[in-house]
View 1 (cartoon, one colour):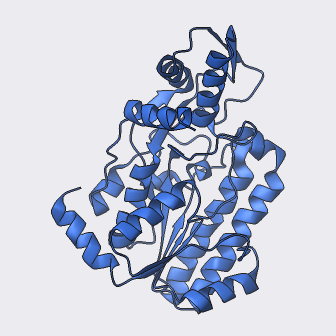
View 2 (view 1 turned 180 degrees about the horizontal axis):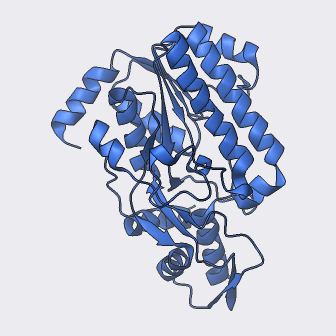
Length: 319
């Protein structure tokens, strides 16, 4: 980012009161740190113990007490394939009701602009790669996380309907799979990168002769470093104004097999890696067309996967 860009962003944000749901989470904490770095007039992060965003009265109380100009909705109930298979009802209800109630109350409280952050899991399972925003409705999401993906997808329907009927200034962004420091490394709920990092470090430290990974390793994914995603969302909030969704990604695709090899090499694991093909791979390809974000607000990811993995592993090793 150039000095000129930084000055422009500071001038833009220093007059804004911004509410960031999920602002203490993995992605949200980085967004909040960057907004505060721009001199944003106020950045409010509601705590879950104080505000249940599934409850209308809590949302009303939050908006009336904070009076935000801008709302960035990042709060979500998320997890990997295992968690999605075990808690599909919770994943659907929590994500749908949070977004539906929050968008409605943002409209009623005349919030100047709202950004809803969706998920790459909403794309149809048979979407041609790279995923273009125009293909968003051309089929049903991958079954392993469909309840979560559909819940988030319904918020785009609401956003477009509210823009059409009420003239609400609301936009919708679709980040690809994220990773980085402070991610969720819990065994039963983490996504693939933290799961592999933890597994390989545990195997190395305990002299295990083999590691068994989930699936076949043939599926491919695109990953975006969390700081890059935060930059993309902030730029989107500042510069994008359309009813159409926009992808936020890195453009760098890799197979899970190659990802496993890279992580094993970085952590120094020298044992055997096996694959449990009885477990699902999930969607076979997940790779975004990122040209719209570049064309409409100049976003390009800056941190290559190799550097991002090293940063993430170093952070985890220092815990």
